[in-house]
Image (cartoon, rainbow, N blue to C red; front, top):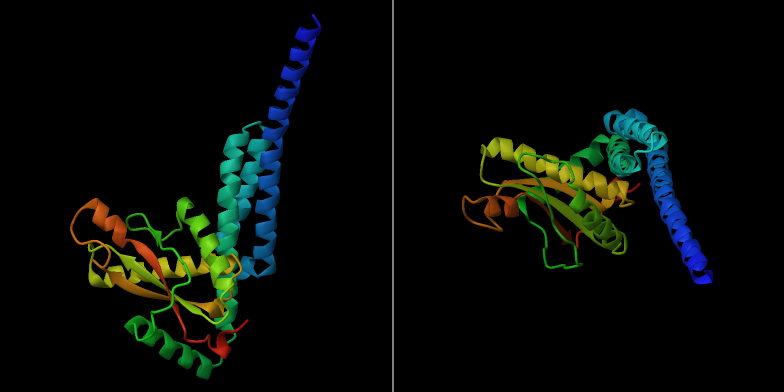
Length: 246
């Protein structure tokens, strides 16, 4: 009888622990999403990246409704997406502020630097352990499986103060050259924005498009196309321009 009572007590404790654990996780994720939204707000995202900021705010509001209705798993998914949107909003706002504060001379200097970067005229002999990320067909948004990769990359970049990282956006061989150059730029820009949102200074990265490529995989298979739809990271010894510092 005593053993049975002990077993019942242990089972009850387990049920309560599981329940509390399930309750705590959405609350923690809500706090993380709201903290990311506050960081975006502090960076000026409501004015400088309104679409991304509003999307994050709306997702958090919907997640709260789901939590109140007991639909906690759905709430967790929305909160994770809200955090991503907030990080993206913060990055875009910080980039906009950095570029908006340039003089005409500084802007011309930056355009010349970007021209050199697009032509690949920089040293590529540095290896600091950065990993590439991949994109879906005809898309430039950061995939969920790329987010932890970018978090690791952001830490590496921040721990290498003497390095400028060029983010190169690539596409598969489908589409016109002009379209793929534009798509490659969007991929590079979204990657840079996410890195900046994670804490990388805008002056530590530049985003350029390389358009369509067969650099990583030759052929007309889906596997080859996927290999070539990427953002590639090129660390260079060129020091960041003082005009791009925060």
